[in-house]
Length: 71
Image 1 (cartoon, rainbow, N blue to C red):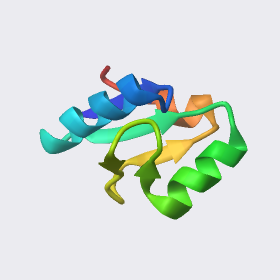
Image 2: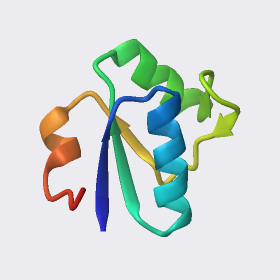
Image 3: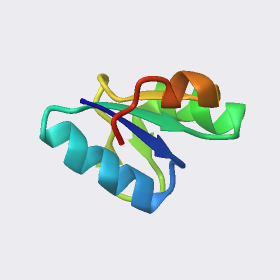
Image 4: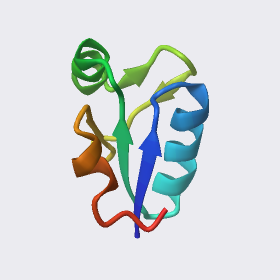
């Protein structure tokens, strides 16, 4: 199941963690290229204490994130 999360704040990261732990494919959207680049490079959220797993994808392309998403 593909899950699209619009936003990379504390709530979005928490949801990403829960869905990822439940073996869902998670894609997150942010409107900031700088934030996306930092999150992809560091794989760490500065909003919550969370190491972002490599299988969680982050993009600024809304269409890519929501295409074929179940939720």
